[in-house]
Length: 210
Image (tube, rainbow, N blue to C red; front, side, top):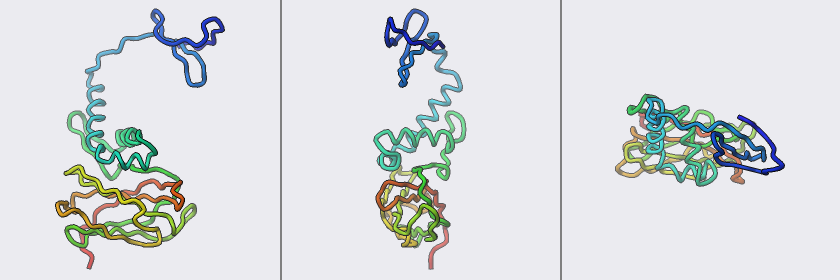
């Protein structure tokens, strides 16, 4: 690949004979050999396309959430890229999603210690956490929850539903949901809404609360 500055031609781009010219964001012109794409149906390429399609299908119901947590309409792209790296196993066409590794938000705000989820009855769950505050955290930070039913592909996004100081919250679920099929994430936002914590996956504890 060649890099050059041309006072004669100025900025150029496109295919020129057997070369491709392009202009980078910093204004530098680059020139590289044009190569025809290889076979798009190799095992590796099929696997990559299949993985992408699988992840999109699994996460599409959470698209509005990623618009909030990853800052804009293209937030789903960040979520998919992350999931493909850390949360998907298997080979085409038998992929599996490890929801415990799925990240739905990132940030420098401190999360909570010892989060837990228990069900009170078949359609009501209790989510709790340790209220201890550490550096870069406040008892006034907001608790936000995402609850996913992977069978129906329905997601419940509860924003600013509680404060860090509240210690727990109860959530009523749709009558058709089964607690044992749930996946839940907790993340915090600062009082001014400018800072986020990295999401925490909460496992379901099957024991009933007395």
